[in-house]
Amino acid sequence: MIARHAFRAVPPLQSGVRRYATETPSSGRVTRWIKYSGGAVAASFVAYAIAYTTGLVEGKRPQLDPDLAKLQAIHKGEYKPPNKAFKGGDQGWLDLKLESVRALNHNTSIFRFKLPDENDVSGLQIASALLTKYKGPEMEKVGLPDAKGYIDFMIKRYPNGPMSEHFHNMDPPQRLDFKGPIPKYQWEQNKHDHICLIAGGTGITPMFQLCRAIFSNPNDKTKVTLVFGNVAEEDILLKREFEELENTFPRRFKAFYMLDKPPPGWTQGTGYISKELLKQVLPEPKVENIKLFVCGPPGMYKAISGMKKSPSEQGELSGLLKELGYTEEQVYKF
Image 1 (cartoon, rainbow, N blue to C red):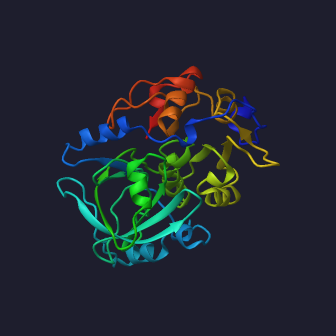
Image 2 (cartoon, one colour):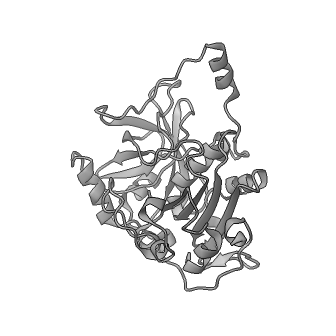
């Protein structure tokens, strides 16, 4: 019983080769987003706003401390909330200019878009999303809610993925339309005692958003367990940032990685995110006030939790989490 509650190392699990970590998202999923955005454009794709640090883009260590200048201004009664570029509602589409592109690895880059005014912030809340459009489907994304003047997107290039191909073929100062924010899971400090993040590929984006919200808030004591599946070690996005969290908060954050093609000397898991691994590292279903979050390509959803019924409906819980005894109330699918 104690082992299920403690953070500890897990021996490598030799399993079949996992294919769902980096699948190209299906065109059917994109079509559903077109339908629920009113069918007003040729194609659109939802993009999760990741709470990125400026350090990630500039190659520095992550900035996890609270904004002291903002806190001081609030204390003095001098704080004026910045203008939010994305207001939601009937705002419509916002046309943004691509400012720069920075490669993270062989198939993923950071795309920085300028906001309308240099003092604007994105207006994105924790675990919210944006829609983007152009004439042809599909993408993944990231952005820092309180950064002024710009928003960053982390885009992985998928073979036969029209929107991700479109991003990677863009050059500054080309432009793209965005709309939002679209609220997802509303986070509040200490909302749960322990959350578990199960991600594949660029499904890590909303997971890191939650991590940053939790660990940048000194009043939030939530424990976090991350299970992250990828093809190769170089595909592990934000690994340095997660290592920083493990070093800074060793009693509250633990990450477990699964690779299809591990390098020599790899000490963690290989193959599928399996039932055995989840049973070892997740809190038991009967533990009170826990929440499990799932995000990744369609094959991962099917194996772990079942697909969402629609963008606004979670759908029935199935897969490994149901087999392990978790309930629909304990699981959230991004």
